[in-house]
Image (cartoon, rainbow, N blue to C red; front, side, top):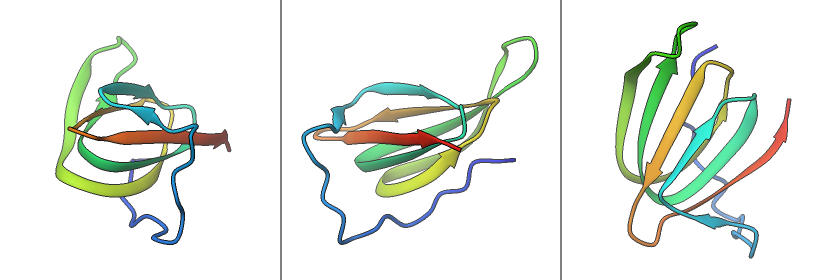
Length: 86
């Protein structure tokens, strides 16, 4: 399964549990949501080697972070949070 960028729920407001960037999120099938972030998606092979699979300019978004994927978030005033594992 690959990471797919989705549009965020515009009605959802980030609560106090949101964290600030920079951040590196290791995939465990959790849902990741962010606001005002540059996003880099890395695929990690069985040897732990990372390969940049996608880059996105500053945006708001969400997506499920599958095993074998690592997401790097950066941005001024960028915030993010994860919810549950599938």
